[in-house]
Image 1 (cartoon, rainbow, N blue to C red):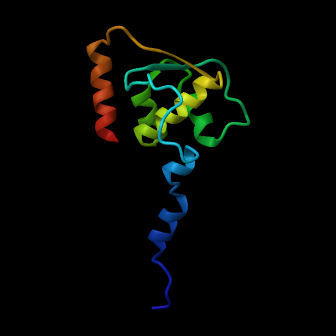
Image 2: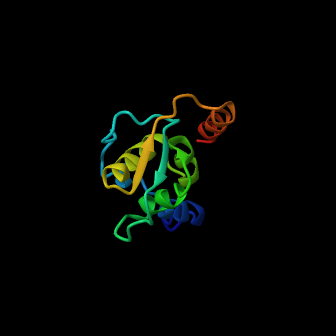
Length: 117
């Protein structure tokens, strides 16, 4: 053994970004009222100065999307998605609204996305 890690572990470690790095060390969103079913939608095109994850979220939210769906589609934990979505709302890149009552189809999609996390 020459002390090197197996190739598969090296590649995986190189592509994994710790969630606290993505959020700048924050665990709490700037907006405390974001829920799994909160609908978010992009206000315009993603600002080029945004980080990769934030640009990806704005692109995903081209159509109204729940916070849970954002987490699943971007591939980040739900808490990270809430922090990033909140940042984007404050920055004016996204707008959000709380649906009064969710259709069953939407609830089922949220459930499926949360299970996938």
